[in-house]
Image (cartoon, rainbow, N blue to C red; front, side):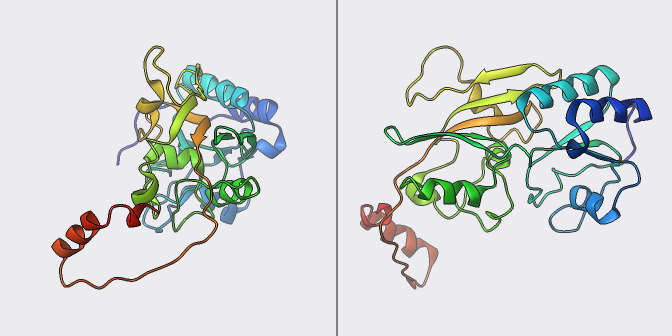
Amino acid sequence: AVRGGDAELTPADIAFFREKLGDAGILAGDGDEEEFRKYNRDWMGKWEGRSRCILKPASTEEVSAVIRYANERGLAVVPQGGNTGLVGGSVPVHDEIVLSLLRMHQVENVDTRSGIVTVQGGMVLEQLDNHLAEYGFMVPLDLGAKGTCTIGGNAATNAGGLRYLRYGSLRGNILGIEAVLADGTVIDSLSALRKDNTGYGLPQLFIGSEGTLGIITRLTLLVPPRPKAVNVAFFWLPELRGCAADLRARPSQTRR
């Protein structure tokens, strides 16, 4: 692909980002090539960009500051969670700035009365699930990449997974979202209400948007009680049509 008309990164840009994020929040220049490759190469190894500036903010305010600056300068930015996508959407095409959310990995609140968790977008899915286990809850989502993917990335791609049949889509379990728009504006729609009919349902726009509308920085998520026991069963049926009929005949068992 031909590089567009985005601005070229300069030493002054690097200095600004380093001032805002500190040394721990930026990887730039002639650093470790293997470290750069972690952010430039996709999960399958099919695509690899050549970004020399990896930003790692630790708060919504830092995300907003660097995105606002990049917008004013005309610098292209690629948001990135755990970089586990299989279609190359989380890596740069050319030399775009990579904005990684991995330092935003805090669980801010677990409401045990309502079963609602407030969490930053860079929290790794498995770590969130382990944290919720201490309170008797679980994430209504399970993936093969759970040890690496982030809950913000899951929301941005509307991920499915192994628990879909029982708990439904991630879209149906997200109650609120905080996101940073391309100009640095922070959209706070972080509702913790199961029913909220005040105004537009903005969170639903960001779910599945894959970073094209904004960067998801925080979420409120409805989490179900963790089962006290888990049983695994294998069924063999001669055709898919029979499988669908069998599930319809046993709706209660498939939802236990």
